Image (cartoon, rainbow, N blue to C red; front, side):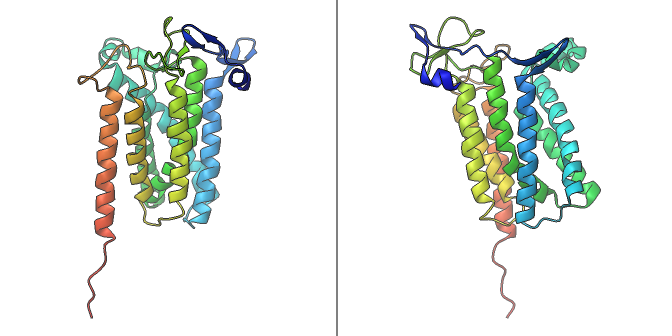
Length: 278
């Protein structure tokens, strides 16, 4: 990537995709892929962020609690992301081919499905361990953006989820995207949904103590960023645009923004100034 930045390869069709091998290491029949490594790095970053924020905010969570919470979340994220893709983006196909739901190696993961899986896992963990759910959700809201960053880098390496056709200087010719240059929308999302969103969430973690505020901020900020960035991203081929020029991802993001705004309004109502009894 550094070499590409120093010596960009241009053609009449835009900057060429750097052709990174999706497989990092070949060990006989075993393959270690960049995409899988990005997931591991994302989970590792999230783990250390949760420990640091939990310690700083003096949450009642032991090291064992955090490790067990991550066991819940890793499984819920994978299952939720897969089921979310099947339900939101290609339901008719998976109804006709139900066994294909388990064919995760063929691709197809949904952020919004993964988010729902994480929320369910966090709620189950909170009930089982008698912990405030919104406290756990706030931790997840701060820890999630680095995972989003590395996940989008994995998408870029795989040459998937590329952007719409463009004649701008940002255009890049992807192997699976035809001969026309397209936006490297994965990198746009990595920057805004990963780095910028993490900076916002981490800064907010110093400014608010009310449980649920960070979750509300995450839902609103991610939803708004993703909604805007969807205009650069090529819609899923099997689904296309859902309402006019609106994609399924944008519809789901609108739902996030509405939920985040409603949660914030409820929290403000509950934390409003109390009437003096004197």
